[in-house]
Image 1: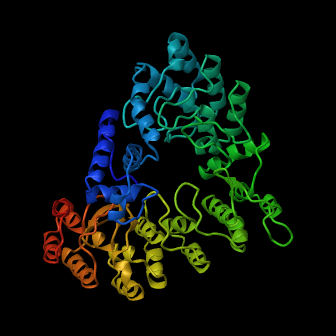
Image 2 (image 1 turned 60 degrees about the vertical axis):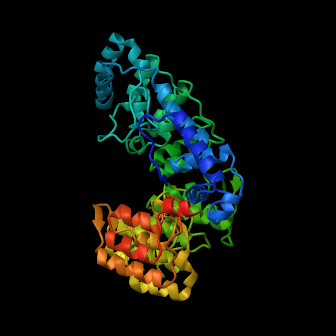
Image 3 (image 1 turned 90 degrees about the vertical axis):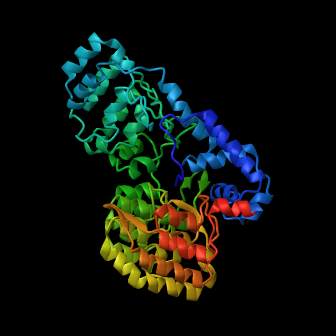
Length: 505
């Protein structure tokens, strides 16, 4: 999860300077730099700060840390994101683009043809040229036939005829949008829930192919190869576009156990297993063959997200890894907790699903997902029946779980992990924070109760001077929260701000 936000028009030179400053701070032995590196560098993640400072840091490694702090995987991805502005600067808004788009959305072929005849350059015009930049930045009219980004109306019934008109007028069939992860119209259609709901996925895919669009059915690649994942059957199914997946299968894409589960094709799903109930063939993901348990677990996640209950019941009778991710965000337990599906939560917990799993962009557990979406029944059941880990117990002030976890594992008092938006933080960092957020907004804890919790953790040996991956101590966080009484208590126990720790050496 990003710990920093890029400005609307980021400057690559300034970002390079940030990487050089991080390297210099590391070379100077600054704990705050080590904490940031330990939170974002895969080789040094979770290492003691002194170990990180003793390890050499290249400029390339510092650049990767900066990129990950901004939520991008590599420096190359960050660089491409910044260069989006340069790509878009070559285009100026066409004064009649919105008119043409309105005709497209309403399916008014006559009006759209008139506009394209009067203004031929509209066919190559680009829209969404201003920040913030996303996948749909620099889209042409043709890109819009997939219903992106998030139309508030259905696709027109004649959307295939609309697309044909655009192509006949010279639209470039494989033109890419110009954002960080550029996509062709084919890629957008394949992942379009709107097109699938309109039963237009298959006809649109076929039309694009007829006009020369590229589609590699071995990988189903329909995006910019260097900057986006290949589009397999996973992506249309994860994006609730089953009609697109069915068309790809018709064209020769081979459905595996995950696709069969997502489509609810019980005939295909049963054929994936032999008479002894063993999976016949494991699919490949990320260029590697999956294990049987992982494949079954991922299939279960697809089935659950796609609401294929027969497939869910069938797969839960198998031996699967119920902690798999890979269908947008979260595990099946996260999704069930978010939906308030208590019966599924209970089934997954009984099957051994990890209640402390934070393998999602929010670094949040299933309990936290339930809390954030105000699913009180699920939250209360998990509180009553599951061993809530110390970070969650502190965040939600579940004192019985705080005490239980510390009895079971006293060393967990200073355990560092990525929790919510603070990487490599301890429970004390969150005890010092006096707010909690859900879908209805930010709410405040009673500061006196949080102070009691801070005292409890300090009495159990919490180190107030551990620097989180955000570069902050618990005292920094208390000050940021405006919790003066907690800050005073921490200071009485020897707490320092990160900058003061560094000055002390």
